Image 1 (tube, rainbow, N blue to C red):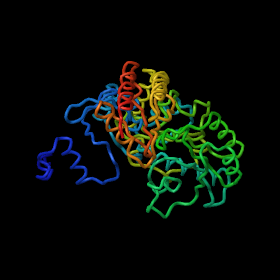
Image 2 (tube, rainbow, N blue to C red):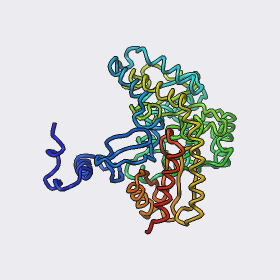
Image 3 (cartoon, rainbow, N blue to C red):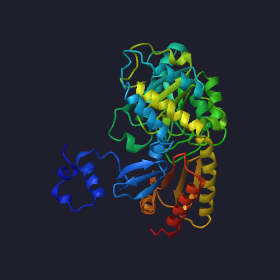
Image 4 (cartoon, rainbow, N blue to C red):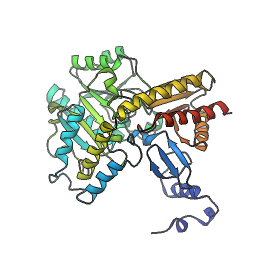
Length: 422
């Protein structure tokens, strides 16, 4: 295999090591992301280090995949043990870890059945298929007439099916034709939901309890509970995408638990493995899950022994280390500090969030580069975050962060904001 020096063009020889790695990605990789210009090579807990050795606080947590912190030793040990024993059998055979993990998931989250997949997008695709299958076979919707209600500004992934329910132009432009069967209504709008649910062909309501990718938008208190009540009244599955908001991130095990809502169909991913391995899952009851029969849905890697071993340990870490409770406490400190900062500057116009999923809104248009430039200065000062939708900065550190560390990070944010010049 070619070394880094052999792979780069001679024109890059005078670049820093970070610049060389970025040039490699630019030359040989797809340009489907716009990363901050930092090249990371190591992580531990709340910290990451770049290839030059600079240390940073990670305030993105791989979009909440590393809630347990980077390279958690217990999860690493579980992975090493399993990887030396058995990694993959496919679902052509039983393995000694899948049933154990399915039981663990069901008891942990309070469901009857679990279906394990790989990515959050794949879990959402699974949820769509389950909702439609149930709609036809249990609710009696005429063939090919099932409707799933989605909401504006949603983010469930980027597959061609999922973007058919998106209102984000960057996700949809020139990727059509789109799949039919979705009705899009405003988020946090009970009257609009009530009207949409009157359609007898609706099989599911597909929402995030908090819209993370959109900019940490939270519905008004009571919206989720009313959505659940309306779904039950109209015999519709409440499909809750907690890929980013679940597993302790918002100060509750699930963000829907802030309103004591237990969705009919729960969609999970990211922190299920603590960042070690791609794992996702859909949890629901027997009536919904058992509409899928052998050969109708599956995945070669879904529910493999390695994924199962990692998942059980990753979830046990959340419980044993009381990371959900820590997220609630540290989130309170963070928002108090940010609200105090707002009184000192007009650059930050809004702070919102729950637990350790938060955002600050920058006083500028979504088309400007102000938030991006602020994040560049955060990085210079040892904190990594990234804007979403232009002028919103999402701030979501690993749930293992301590009060001393959260205050240190707030000091960095305050220093940059107070000294920032456009």
